[in-house]
Image 1: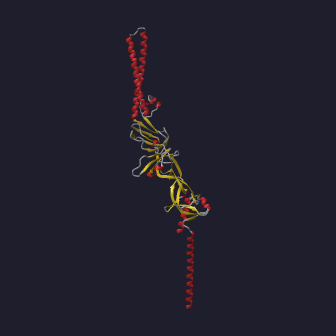
Image 2: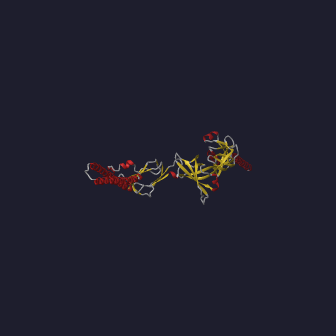
Image 3: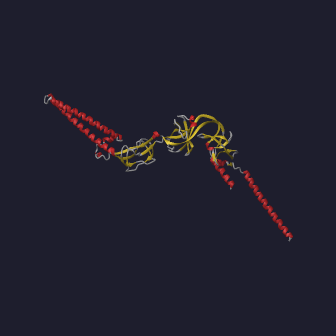
Length: 408
C-alpha cells in the first residue's frame, strides 16, 4: 500500500512539473514576442508599399520663407452682385428661373404686369396721337399759307389775310414741337421700364389697343452669374421695396480674413496670397491682396484682409472656410517636409521615417511654419532622413492595426 501511494505521489509531482514547464515556456514565448514587437514601428513589404502609394521624401535644410497664416471665408465680389428689384408695383405673371440657376446677362428672369408701365403706355399713346394730330394741323396750315401766297400775287386776298394764315402756320409749328417733346418724355420713361424702340413702335398696333400686353414688363439679368436669392412666387404683388433676385457673378471671389496686429507689418496691398480649403486639400488657389483695412477691430485687434481669387470654374463656393497664407520677405534656415507627410496620432503630430527598406518608425515632431505645400519641422527630424510623403495615412492605418492586434 505504501508503495502504491509512493508511486502515485511521484506521478502527480511529475505532472505538476510538466505543466509548470509548459506554462513557463508559453509565457517566455509570449514575452519574447512582446519584446520583438515595437509599438512605434511598422513593417510594410515593398509590394504593399507600391499598392499603398507610398512615396518617400528626403529631409534637407533650406531657406524657409516666413509666412502669415490666418483663416477666412469665401465671399462674393461686391462689385459683381446684382440686387434686382421691380421698377414699380405689379403682379408676377411668370418666373423662368429658380434658386441656384446659372443665368446669362440679358436672360429673362420673370414677367410681371407693371401697373405704372400700363399707365405710362396709355399716356404715351395719347401724346403720340396728339402729336400726329398736331402734324396734320401743321400740314393744313402750310397748305393754307401756300394758297394765300398764290392769291396775294393776283390781289385776290388782302395782306391782312396773308398775315393771319402765316400766324396760323407758325402756331401749328409750335404745337407740333410741343407735342413731340411731350411724346419724347413719355417715350424715355418707357425706355426706363425696359422697352426697346421696336417695342415702342408697336404700341400703336391693334395688339396693344387695350394696354394689356404692353404693360407686361420683362425683368432680365444684368450680369452673368448664379441666382443666390429668390423670394417671389407667381401671382404675388410686388413693389419697389421688394428684392426679387440676387444674382452673383462668381467668376471672381473674395477670401475675407483677419490679420493680427503683430502681422500687419508683413502684409501689403498687391501682394500674393495662397488659399487652401478642406474641400480641395491638395490644391492651392492663388490670388492678390486687394485691401487691408486702415482701422483695427477694437475687440479682436485684427485688420480686415481681402484677397481676390479667380474662380472661372466655380469650384470656390460662397461661405467656404479658407486658410489664407501670405508669404513675407523674411526667411530663415530650417527643415521642412511635404505637408502630406504629417499625421496626427493621440493628439500628437507624427511622421514616418524609413529605418530599413521595409521598416518605418513613427516619429513625434514639433511643427513650425505651415506653408501652402510644406511644413517646417522644428524638432524630431534630422537632415538626410527619409520620410513617407504620399501614403502616410496608409502607414498610420497599418501601425494602428498592429497596435490593436497586439493588445488583443
